[in-house]
Length: 544
Image 1 (tube, one colour):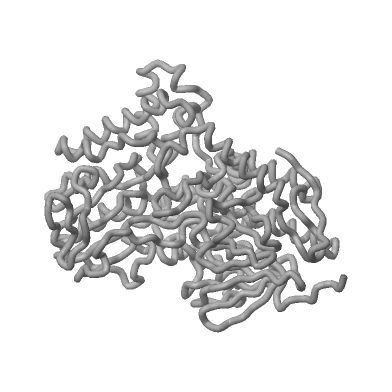
Image 2 (cartoon, helix red, strand yellow):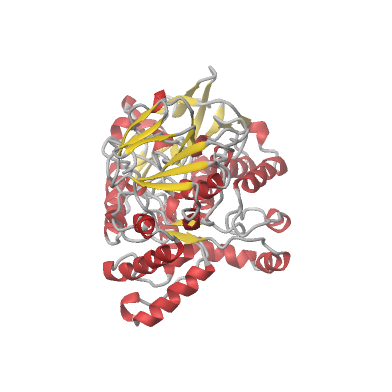
């Protein structure tokens, strides 16, 4: 068989957020010719688009950062415990400048179609700018939360006021002064945006479909002494994060085996400390429904103590899912906002939306007249950005058709039938269940090592085998079903997208376990993958 010819690039990367920039830097340092395609006008990924009021990371700043450069770690100074969007974007822009990454990025360019050329073992991409580009390998650094979803409500196109989505916020900002504003959605974005909008708008109406568990952030300035103390042990912190995902305080005790008074004391301690670490108060909270109810009752009691109107407080108390089975939210003054005279909560379970009219939102109780509507309705998570591209693999197979019943991957890194295409923090990996930067750095390193393995052996093709993919999908499903996580209608299962298959997409194992599984595969010559040149590539076996 004739060896495939060399394409224009070694690797194409789609996306210039945290994942794409690190992948570019890593591969370029190893001597690969790399090109990045980015739809936005600059670097940043989700932090380029998410400019809504109150946008902030729910992972502490000192952890939500790259570890590949010790100089960068030591020199960058964060200002807050939880960094806001502008500061995170400045950090990403600094990284792009510091490592001269922009020269290999095509901005304002969206990939429309990607096809695998089986005769040449390369990917051919078409873009909306007319650019046609080829590469041996393609890396999807498209982000887990990057395709905003507008609500499927009749009449929304006929609303006379402005409609904004939190995930595609105008870069010039929005002035709500003196306006009557409606917010649809009370997930993480809505919970961050609502207090900020309430402080500016004349009136704010919040349309809530599902009440969420919200934990206070207790955000504040990140003092120099605290920052320097952390930086002195950065290497140790990073190594622990690679095993734990995020450096939370994990308990080795079960709530079921702890007295009620001791449980209450621990919940209160963690509530006062703030942050997502609250859910790790005991080690059985995500597997034991009775234990979970104890922490859920604690939060509901907090809501009732904060919100002055008892009826509003009850509407804000989640009762349809265990705590932590939907993405737990971190807030600054969210529940307190409902004590403001200019804020009204509309419980859509009691008074559902009928339609959006020109003048506002019509529910079963009447018309809410509005000047502006904010849709904090989330994203087509994990698969949306990948499936937004018309991707075709071996024999012209469409990825949309293959994933029609839910995403199928091996290790969350590749999908059978689509050789040489890698996915960073996709479905079937820990992804959104850990600090995303930790997951990204692991995937970047693993992909880089895999490409080096192929290059050293003169191989031009790598893909997941069907058997390995089947085993991995079963393994991921079994892991999720051992927890309470599938019990909620969450975006983890695609429940926020009409018609999307209900499949629990992330891999719930602690990232240290996942990293070892990935390393075992690599150590066995990339067992479960088909390696070689063209159709003659061969597979090795591996079982979990």
